[in-house]
Image (cartoon, rainbow, N blue to C red; front, side, top):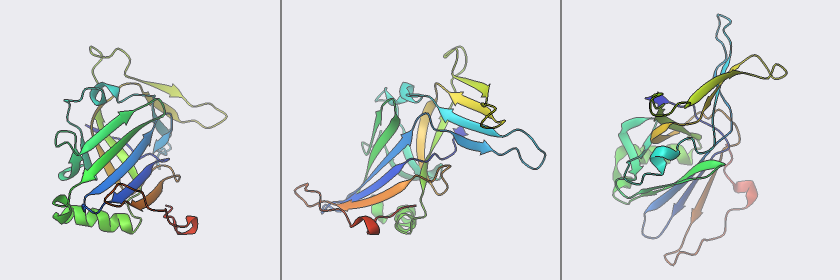
Length: 204
């Protein structure tokens, strides 16, 4: 399984209700490039990667296919999953988005407490997919590698058109700097309380 580089322009949002369940919300954008390798000390060519719109649609569009939300690509540190009924995924041309419910019981688990501590300290900064590329017999052109526009650089660009998504992970180092994290609290009646003053918004 490939562990995709974390991408930017992500929104990771936490909301707490009086039920004490917590909700996380995230966004993984399409058509955004991440630097996979800068070429290294041996002078190799840089490599970049991007996902075409709805690249994850195959498994996302099949509701019986289980997909997990993990911490750092570790199945030993799960946060939510579709199979458990705690993870919802929505695919669109611009991005894959998710909402995850972290139950009160799960919040008692050590790694979940560690995650929220790191999240509160602004150390969790992005989302990274764990995926496989389908074989050519299943998808004729699941990916391609092209040359970067010479006016922009010399990198090889890998574009992924179809990928089998197995998990999304919350990670510390996104490839882009646009990631924002917001927290909101909701009353038992579902009313969203006012957001903090913009100067107090967490920005990574």
